Image 1 (cartoon, rainbow, N blue to C red):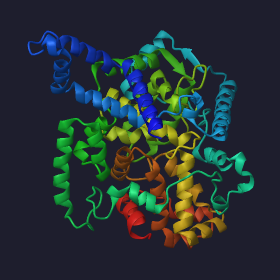
Image 2 (image 1 turned 90 degrees about the vertical axis):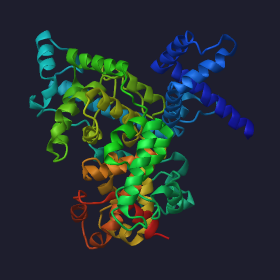
Image 3 (image 1 turned 180 degrees about the horizontal axis):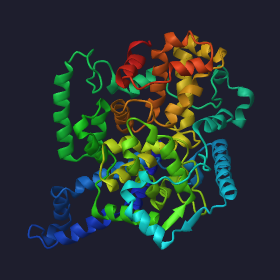
Length: 512
């Protein structure tokens, strides 16, 4: 066992070293180390130790630590050396197959749209058009291309239908005894946490721990906790330590420090080369017109532009999403994503209905386009991609659906059976919240408190817990409804909900 752990550790170290070797941090470190050779305090006889000491005092060691920590957070732990690469992407064959056929369906839908509308997947823009786009880069929202013929490639409910049909061929007809009792829409046996495990996992959300986002109810007066919490947050930022920042935000981020703390956790520093990279993506947008661009325009118009909180960020959303659709570095995440990168001219991610809502809340925090862009890209390759790909990962959408249904069936059985009987399976209502990580459903201040915890725990499981908590909160009204439409009406508006009290009560107060 020890031997296996050692092998795993050395494999992980080798992988991280390999990945960092190609990074700009590596070349910067080399440059700094070379430059330090001319410093008087560096002696030839203690060269190695002196350079280490120099890197430590000049802050470079901390930057390296944060980069390693970031790699550990993003990439999965290495499999057995003999395991095929697709195992890293997704160990269950039936999940890989389902994801493959779902991708084929999306591409088919795209191709038929191109054929119907007689437009190419990609074309080079004529010079005049390039100039025009460059001139209105900061006010693309005023441009109204005719998008009546374009439709979203798919909506969350289409995706839910696919997930409902997932079956593990080894458990034909659900003959695994513990699973036979699952009466929800998701019919695959994956291991999800129960309430005692969730309590343990989310222990920092406990009733006796200070939280931002809770007005009273704790022993400590909120303003006392808040002042102290802000002081600690400032220290964490001074230290520039990603791991400490991640631990800190589990209790919520003070509004004034959130942008910097998230950037620290995601290891985003917006160096000159990052700004240059963003400018290159921008020039690619100016030069080439992709079919995906129209889908992005359409999505922003259908979602964020109609949202009271986010319509003001329309231009930012176009800039970020158009650049994102051309960013080949995003393709790296396909090494640990069950999906495969689309071929041909669609190099990146195909947006679905609501995709732009992953970016919208970040616009409140970052006003500099290249930084906003990097934060979104990192949030996407760490978290959001899991919400629209089929996998067995604990933060993947299939596990989240199953966790949500299991929590409701176990802890609110009467409500669960009632809704099921009237044809209002709870997942049909909560699925869209989880796929969008609640963006566009909660008030922005509440959404950011929820996303603090996603970053803090490096997990999306809190989305399923919150979805179950919302049903628990509205249980009395839901017990009286007699149709899916009526149940949807009860849960139509989540904008007044307070996230943290809901989570705390559901996890720590009501359930034994």
